[in-house]
Each structure stands twice: as C-alpha cells, then as structure tokens.
Image (cartoon, rainbow, N blue to C red; front, side, top):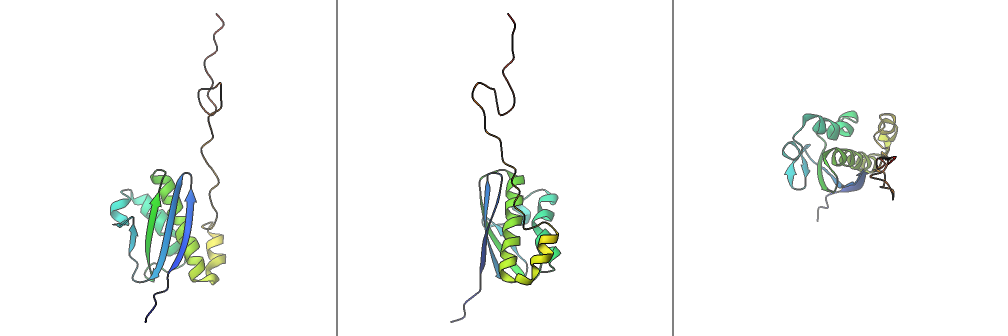
Amino acid sequence: MNAITKFMAVGRRKEAIARVQLIPGKGNIMVNGIPVDKYFARETDRIIIRQPLEVTNTLNKYDVVGNIKGGGFIGQTGAFRLGIARALLLAEPELKDLLRKNRLLTRDPRMKERKKYGQKGARKRFQWTKR
C-alpha cells in the first residue's frame, strides 16, 4: 500500500484558525474546498499566502489544502500563511533558518482588546456632561 505523506499544522491570527495540510504535488492551493484564487479575491492576500512557498522555493513541490474558520479576510490570510510555514517546517526542518529570517514562523500576538465596563468600548468613554 502506497501511503501519501501529509504534513499538518495549525496557524492562528486574530480570531481566525487555519488547519493546513501539505501534500507532495504540483503546487495547487485549496481553501475550504475552493481554489485560493476564488476564495481570496485580493491579489495581496494571495501574495501573502504564497510567501512561505516562494521564500523556500517549494511553490511547485507541494499541494496545500486548508480549512479556515473565524475572523475576517486579513486574519484568515495571516493564519493560513503561518499554517503553511509551520507545515513546511515539519516537511523540511532544514528550512527553519530561512523561514525564521523572513519572520514567517512568528505568530502575530495582536488581538482585539476587550470592552471595559462603564465605557463605550475598549478605549472610548461615554461623553462627560457638566450639567
């Protein structure tokens, strides 16, 4: 029986969570069962997603299958990129220095700040009236 090697990783950013599978193939990228060009309408999002594969020169070496939940398009893009980078690290550990140098393995820690009681939002206050 011929077993196909899969490398699985998880990427997160803001509220988005991306589960990524890296499979040896021709370079197809699928997101939630849809080709990446249809799922992400903006060209900048597609460039960001392909970044780990282009930096490591493995764009035509692996097929990427991803499942993304939560967040908006910016968060989903960042989560998917981190998932691809982590999966590449599992597939080829010698790429770690290259991925680290291009800041592709760093999880973006910025999250939405919670709303505080007695306030309108996280930072915004209710208007103060003298009389």
